[in-house]
Length: 352
Image (cartoon, rainbow, N blue to C red; front, top):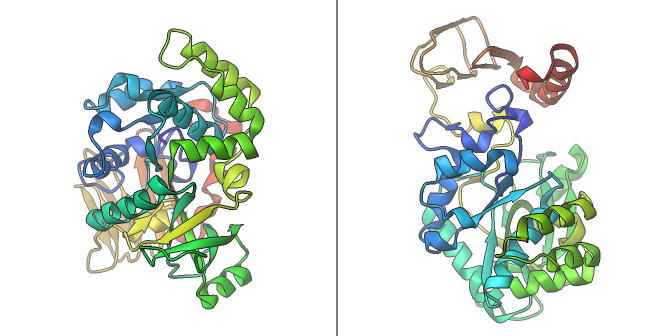
């Protein structure tokens, strides 16, 4: 899934070039490219599909030259993850009724690649033989209010992989007290938003739980000249809804596998700070020409051709991108979306 606009990473992430298309960690590969690389040990490149917005078609093909052009699925509108996943699932189901699918965001960090591969293959063994929907869960390390949480119970059947549990409840972004309770209880995991199921199982779940959406995508003439028009009609008729809310929270055959894969959704500059090497003052710096004086615990991201001198800052975000500079306290990073809205209202679309 590569269609988001990543507004919390403004001004690095802009509508025309969102964060999945940026080398946000300074590794030499964009997040989208890193995600593509991550799946090569799991399936052949011919079996990798990318769903993105129509406006990012050329960006995806430019960054992923090994992607088959017919495996690039372009959404005519942004309507959350349920239509996005339905489009890919029905398209693949039309080609292979026995397909197994893994659905993943293109803008997450997974630092333990080998462990990730083992986790996915373990889930595939279950999804191949059972009618089930599986999500990866991450053991929480702090009472974070920005993540969804999954409560689990022991599976009613003996699992070959004892990390796989039955899902009891989903809770989306709890308040601080509830998040503390979840952390202390020990039977909650963060929802990584990475899903494993057979094409048959997810199509069946849509038919039962989102029947209108199922009907819309089932009627598309896939792999023909009529596919694009059919997809436009499907998107026009379906509602804006997440697969979590529309399917997973209502289904009774949902499982979670606890996975130590070095995961971060890289949702904020604060989460990015945790994954960038620090200098002796705990500053996380991306950029070749950054000079720091009497500053500590900052995250600084500057394009390689710019020289920036920072003096006297503590716990700040300093980001430069093209014609924009953002200077913001780390503790106030949730306000960045408000800044974006204000810029849009007062300065126009060109800065968004």
